[in-house]
Image 1 (cartoon, helix red, strand yellow):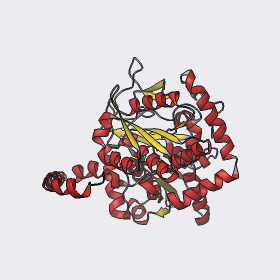
Image 2 (tube, protein in one colour; image 1 turned 120 degrees about the vertical axis):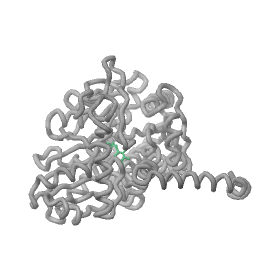
Image 3 (tube, protein in one colour; image 1 turned 90 degrees about the vertical axis):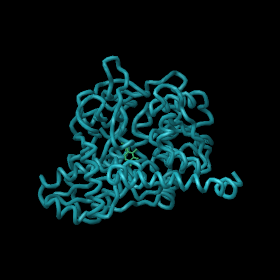
Image 4 (cartoon, helix red, strand yellow; image 1 turned 135 degrees about the horizontal axis):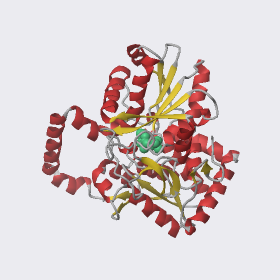
Length: 423
Ligand SMILES: *Cc1c(COP(=O)(O)O)cnc(C)c1O
C-alpha cells in the first residue's frame, strides 16, 4: 500500500483530532496535493534540495565491510551528508516551502532529542520564516547542544512543563498552539505519523532518498536484494522504501531499537517486542507501546531518535501485511556496528542509523556474493559524542568535561566582558 485512502492505510492512520484541527488539516491536504502537481513548486523544491541540502547524497560501496563479512555486497546511502547531518531536513524544507506557498509566516514544531527541531529551525532560517520549537523541559536540559543550535538558527525554543515534560507533551503543546493559530501558522510534524495528511506528506518529502537510490542502482547496474533502515517514527525508512513498496523486490527491513533487552520499558520495539498493541494517540491509529490502561509506556534506547512509543501508520500496516520485515538491534549491537563502519569504511553512523548497520552485519554473511544490501545511514554520528564518548572512553571523557568546566570558570570574565558584548 503505497499511499493512504481517505487517510487510512488499511486499519491504521486516520485523523483523530479535536474539531478545531479538522479544517487546518483539510486545507493542508488540499494545498499539499496542489503543490505536488505544480511544476513550479517541484522546481523550487529541487533547487533547494540540490543547493542547500546538498543532494543527491552519495551511494557508497562498502568494500572492506563487504570483504570482512564475506557475503552480500554492502552499499551505504550517505544521508548523513545532507546539510544539518541527517535526513530530517528533507521533510523540514518540504513542509516549510509548502507553508510559504500557503501564505503562512509562522512555523511551529515539536522535538524530542532536538534533531527535528534543529532541521526545522535551519529550514526556517533559510526560508525566512518565524520558528517556535516545543520541547519538553527535561529534554531541553539534556540536549543543550541542539537547543543552542536552534537558537543560533534564530528559533525560539519553548520548554514544555506539562506531563512528563518530554516529547509526547511537546506534541500536545504544538497541537494546542496550531489549534489556536491555524490561519498564520503551519505545524511541521517531524516523522511519518500524526493525523492525515502528515504520514503521506512526510513520506513524499522523504521519498527523495529512495528515488535517488533507485536511480543510483540503475546507473551502476545494481539490483538490491534488501534495503535496511532504522525505524523510530518511520520517516527515513518509509522515504527510503517508498519507490519499492509496490514491487515484489527488494526485501524491505526496518530495525527498531532493542534497547537493553526484551523486557517492558527496556526498548522501543513496537512491532517486534511483546508490549506493542493497537491504540490511538497524537491523532492517529497505529501500534504503540501501551500499558493495560492505554497509557504510553516508558521506552528506552541508546539512540534518542528511536526512543518513541509510536510508529507511523503506513509502517505498521506494511509490517502487518508482511511487505516490511521488522527486526531490532540491541544498544550494544548498534555500538559495535558504529565502530565497525567507522574503522573499516571511514564513516561515522548516527546511533539511530547504527541499528540498521547492525542488521546488515547480521544479514550479509547469510546471503551470497551476488546479493546486494543497501543500508540507509540516516544521519552522521557527530551529534552523538555525548553518548558514545562516555561509553568508549569513560575516564578520559570525564577528565575532559572536568577540564572544560574549569576552563569555562577561569575564562568567565573574558566571555562576559568581550565576546558577549552585543547580546
Ligand atoms: C530522528 C532520527 C531517526 C528516527 O526517525 P525516523 O522518523 O524513524 O526516521 C533516525 N535517524 C536519525 C539520524 C534521526 O535523527
